Length: 204
Image 1 (cartoon, rainbow, N blue to C red):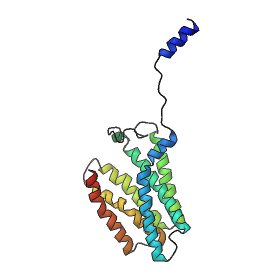
Image 2 (cartoon, rainbow, N blue to C red; image 1 turned 135 degrees about the vertical axis):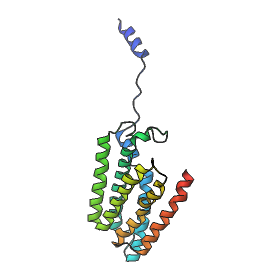
Image 3 (cartoon, rainbow, N blue to C red; image 1 turned 90 degrees about the vertical axis):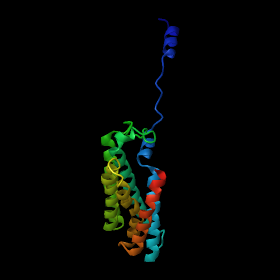
Image 4 (spheres, rainbow, N blue to C red; image 1 turned 45 degrees about the vertical axis):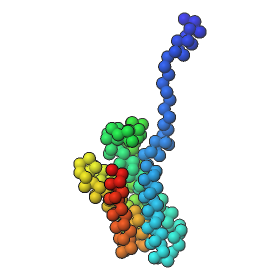
């Protein structure tokens, strides 16, 4: 076969389209940046109010240490959530293209990333702020991943149960600034806890 004929045959064959996904882009999806940002902002609000009660600057460097640790745990929780829901994510158009649902990130890979971020962030928060903040942040992650996520397919009570970890970020921000749980922090928790029900119902 001549070179020209070979080129003609080769050009007539369908070419596989290169994937538009990159590992960096898949990590971005894995970490749910919009959800994570909301957690960080509500924690920052709790820290701001707690710092005013403490008489320290709301923009003290301890704020950025706290938010960094919270961001680590939050993004790790999102990765573990997608590991748990990888099978059901494939069934919904909104989530079908997530990296773990499409096997672009394997189960072991996703679990390793998630556990490293959650454990590393918890240890960092414990050392950089105080043990109470580290413990509350870890409880938030466990409640979200191990309780709320599995219950979504079992009972509508998942909304009530999921409201607890969902309302903890401002309280965590407060304890990062103050080191204790106080009535103003409980009020912040209660406001966000009650807000989640009309929020979920509106989405539904």
